[in-house]
Amino acid sequence: MTDLIQLEKNNSILTVWLNRPEKKNALNAEMISSLMQLTQELQNDESTDIVILKGKGDCFCAGADLSWFKEAAGMPEKERVETLKALPIFLKTWNHLPQTTITVGHGYLYGGALGLLAVSDFVILDQNSHLRLSEVLLGLIPASISPYLIKRMGFKRSKALMLGAESINAQLALAYGLVDKIGPSEKLPEIEERLIANIQKSAMQTRRMLKNYLFQIVNKEFNDELVEFSAKALSKAIDTEIAKEFIGTFTANEK
Image 1: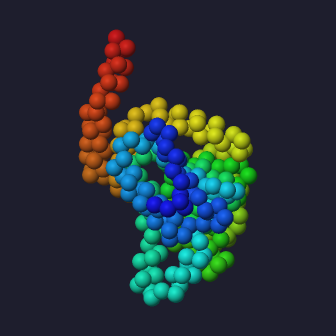
Image 2: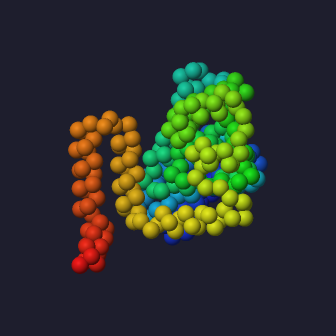
Image 3: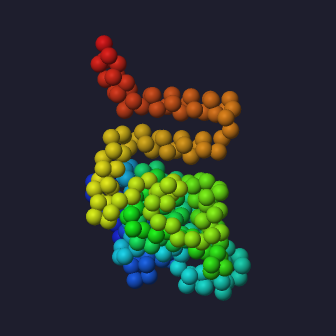
């Protein structure tokens, strides 16, 4: 892992900093490799409950580094495809992390940066931020991030932002469902703390179980198989010590 990302651990909360401020935290092969290594380590990390992603410097992330694309352009097609798989593989892995994830953004967020928002469980944004999917202006397409943007905002809205390549502000990003909370920069730490406190009212084990279940059912049809699957999932949750304790306490108080 390189110094292109920095890690800060506070009890069960891990903060991950994109640390390439001189390049507006643009994603290159080395940074993505470091992020991928981290996600692999987090898969079996029982000590980390919440992962927060932030960017050093005056903006969160300017998207993918065009120098990386220039290098890829000079490769044979098979090698180029393998190289460019790095970002979608990372996005898929981050999206499915067992931990609860929060991204806190500020400044300018371009291209791939919006993908980082879309694969997070919660997104907090500085109210003065500007977001843009500018790939088509460069002769490119947002292929790696588009599946997640469509899941997050819907097909019609995502398509308009990709084709129009217009800059939107934090207020619109909130209205579109890409962002969950916005506020002035000086209030972001307070918003973050309140969100964390609310999240941690529930047990880490329960939230992990819920995330895993949701990803398994998101594309399932409403049929008898789903009925069976959902009943088994609830049965498993009821059988945990956490649920037994809460149910026991609640029913005892009713008497």
